[in-house]
Image (tube, rainbow, N blue to C red; front, side):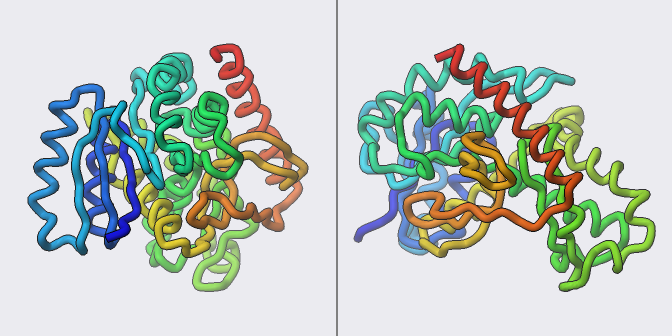
Amino acid sequence: MNRKKIVVVGCGTIGTTIAYSLMLECSSIAVSLINRSENKSWAKAFDISHCEPLLNKNVIKSERLEECNGADIIVMTAGALPKKDGTRADVLKDNVAIFKNFLPVLAKNNSNAVILNITNPVDSMAYAIQKITGFPEGRVIGTGTELDSMRMRRFIGERFGIDADKISFTIIGEHGDSMVPLWSCAEYDGQPLSEKLKGLDDSKDELLRKTKRAGWDIREAGEHSCYAISYSAVRIIKAMVEASESRLLVSSPFDGQYGIEDVFMSQFSVLGAEGVKDRIAMNISKDERIAVEKSAEIVRGQMKMVDGLL
């Protein structure tokens, strides 16, 4: 059977949640786990493999880094975590060093793969991956603001007592503090959100703050966010596995959208079997365009840091 091979690097809570979710959500795939501790990746794969008889002809195993080859998609979850009250960018130096250590081998043996990055800071680490591997544009992407947009929909629905699944909301730019919510494009059941919700303007700042803080709030409760980001990653992976040409909010280099070039940030992108096929600019307000430009400057600064580290 010709199964799509998906390699998950890192067997922490996010990596293992993604692996398990892929086994549940996809059909006819082969999942491989790679981890610094080979015993851990073996144990996780062995545990999940006991579900195989009932899981859509899917298989899972662990592999050693040097043995891994033939991947269609590589999912990067390994890396250092920010300290409490830190920022995602704080761990950029550590994570670039980690990736430099093993990515060349992985890239050499899986030269046709698409690499999906989850490790923070998502956007600049996706750029680091492209620099380290030399993979072409479109085949290195970050999970971007797919998660942030999903969170915002949840918080709007909760705040106003409406169905979150009827809310259309887009966040673009950095997956970080400079993320840009596109209020001008927001809708509820096909109608402009501003017409549907009285008092929305008074709630915008708090809703955005809550969205930015969501992961940190989980961290301060003594846990690490893993379920929502894993679900976002699985949606992105499924779009590529199924070559569905779905439009999702992932990070890759802008190529002229909103007047911005060569900055890894999130925007609506058409996904296919070989990664990003197209990028789609939306009709946004002047203030939102200015905010996107500011977000680009922040990410560009992180990318310059990556250049210095490589």
